[in-house]
Image (cartoon, rainbow over all chains, first blue to last red; front, side, top):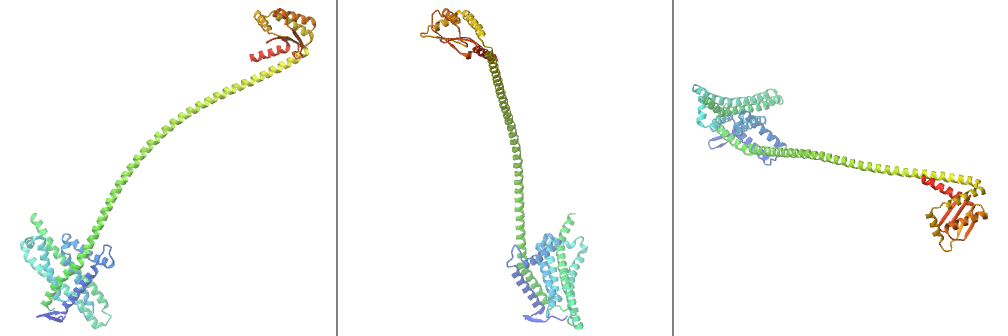
Length: 225
Length: 249
């Protein structure tokens, strides 16, 4: 894929269409959420019911993995899911590209997951306990832990980028070769793939965070034993 | 696969801002209202449980009250039954006494009625007997029978007790007294003189004597001396006989 077009510059930094699309998604989500949640009632309407169902479903998924820290990690994980789903589906809108089809975006998200793993891990048990888990069950595994941290982050970024980019590319190629309506089934596949990839990314991020938070408990138990 | 560091950094910043936006405008309000609803539901459930508990307690108390009331009712019923039985026994005894009294009264009344009836029948029988005898004696009445009765009268006058003679003599002292002699048949002179003599001997003085005939005497005599009445006739004998029979009955 080509380099996204620079829309404008902030000093020496060029703001690409991808970033503008992300801003659009942010603005849409922000306005929609503000509008939808400004008058919440105890007896919910249809929109409130949908929103409550969405948030509670995400909360239940997180609680199924880390019930003790669900409230703590919910904003991060839920935002990952919501943003990636919408970003993936943005490619269905003509003249727009999925931000997640860009490696810089997915790398940024993966970097955030990488940082958040350490952030939540340190917050839950302290930096000493957190760093100690790299030495368990034996210090010999420390290099493998470090390599794993880097590779899984790269895998996160590349997996999402590769899948979404390839979907858009395939749809474009089919459109060029077969005609106007032929890519429609492919677009349906795009929807499914967008949901699946968002779920995979968010769930992996959740598992990584949960691993960082719960591995200390495991190492503590191991030390006590 | 070109990598743009500006996009990379801006995406990180954008995502962090989006996290704040969604936390501020989506997660917090929604989770808050859900928590509030859960709290309300829990409160409602707690209230409902409390109400249910109170209702159960009230139900238990009510059942106890019902049990106590049932026991009291049964005790009152038993007492009432006992009182009713006692009252019934008393009333039955009273009624039986009244019935016995009534039966006794009825028996006495029946006895008296029967006795009166028997007496009436007896009187009727005696009256019929007297009437029959009177009728028979009326047919048998004759001067010979009268002579025989005259002899009986003369004999009775002579055999009077002294006390009766004195009483008759005392009655004869009444001034203006007139002796009345009635006979069924006309007396002849001899008999009149004989009677006059006997009466003078008995009273001790000469009194005016009036002789009458009275067929109702059937046969015989009746002598009136003031308040004294001496009789030797069939009518008065039958009457005396009848009275004796009645008194005997």
